[in-house]
Amino acid sequence: MSEEVVLRVLTLNCWGIPYVSRHRDRRMKAIAEQLSSGDYDIVCLQEIWSLKDFNMIKYKTQDKLPHTHYFYSGVLGSGICLLSRYPIEDVMFHKWALNGYVHKIHHGDWFGGKGVGLCRLKVHDANINVYVAHLHAEYDTENDEYSAHRVLQAFDMAQFIRMTRQGADAVILGGDLNTGPDDLAYQIISGIASLVDACSNIHSDVGTSECANNSYTPKKIAKLLPQGKRIDHILYLGSKHFKLEVSKCHQPFPRRIPNESVSYSDHEAVAAEFKLIKGKYDPVEKDIRGPLKEALSICDTSLKEIRKQRIWYLLASLLLAVPLIWSMGFGLSYESIGVSIGVNVGRLLATAILCYALFMSSIWNCVEQNALKAGYIAMETRLLQLNRNTNLEKMSA
Image (cartoon, rainbow, N blue to C red; front, side, top):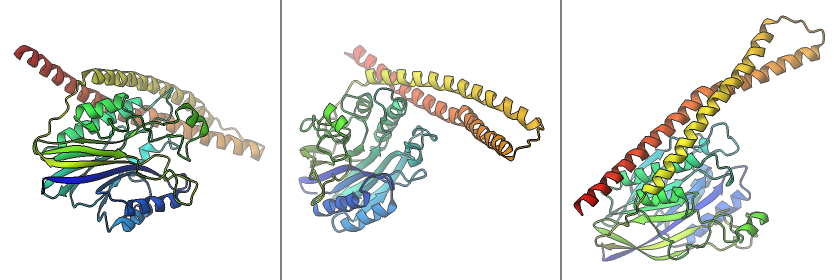
C-alpha cells in the first residue's frame, strides 16, 4: 500500500418499507443513480426492506461498487446492507436479544430482526472492519417505552465491535443509530468501543432526520427544530498499524431528486472522507462509568415494569378465563340465530384476547426479562472491571 489511501464512506437510511414508504420506487432508483454517479468506496444502507430494491441498487452500482452483502435476519430481513469498492473477505451478523415487541406490528422493529452487521474488507494490505447498524427507533420522546431496548442494543453493539476488532487495521461504523451525540446510547457506543465521530468537529449541528428542508418532514415538527436531529453517524477507530484521519464530512445528496419535488429519503445521507495512513493511532479513552450507571438504572426500572406487566396480564387472563369456562359449561339454547352467532363471536374474541394475555404473561415476559437480565449483568461486569482498573491506576500513581 502507498503511504496514503483515501476512503470515501456514505451512510443512508433509505426508508424503503414496501406499501408504506411514500414514492419508494422513484426514490430507490434516484438513490441508485446517486451512488452509481458518485465516488464512494464504502456504502452502508439501512431500511432496504425489499430484496427487489437491493438487487436493483446492486445492479446499477456494480461498476463502482462490485462487492455487496445483504444481512438476512428476522421475518422481513434486517434491512441493512453494504456496498464496497474493495473485496469483502468475511461477514458476520449479530442479532440483538431485545428488538422491540412482537405485538407492536405498526412499529415493526421486531419483525426486522435488527442487529449489527460486520464486513471485513481488504483495502490493499489493510484489513478494515466495517459495521452497519440500525438501532430501535424512538417513537415517543415524552414516553419512550423502548429506552431500555435501545440502551442495551447500543451496549451490545459496542461490545461486539470491541471484541471483534482484534486483527483489524481500522474500524468504521455507519448507520442510523437513532441517538444523538448528547444521548446516553451514543455515549455508550462511542465510549465502550472507543469510537470517534467523523462529523463531530465539522457538521455537529447539522441534522439528518426530521430536517425542515426535507420534503417528508411534517411542518409542525420542522418548526420546532428546523435543523433536525443528527442520528445518522459514521464513527471510526484506527489501530497500532494504521491511522484514520477525517478530511471531509458532508451531506452529499441534493435537497430534492432532480426534476422532482421529493427528497431521496426521510433521512439525509452522510458522507465522510478518510485518509488511511500507516502509523500508530492513539484511541480516545472516555470515562464511561457514569453512562453505564445510568444505563443500569434504566434497565432496573424496565425489569420492575415488566414484572408489574406480568401481574396485570395474569389478572386479565383470570378475568377472561372465568366467564369463558362458565359459558362453555352453561348449555343455553338460543331461540334467535343472531343471538347465538353474537355469543359465539364474543367467545372467539375473548379466547383470542385470553391467548394473547397468556402469551404476554408467560413466553414473551420471560424472553424480555431474560434479555434485560443478560444485558444488565454484562454492563455490571464491564463497570466493575472499569472500577478495578481505575483503582489500580490510583494505587500505582
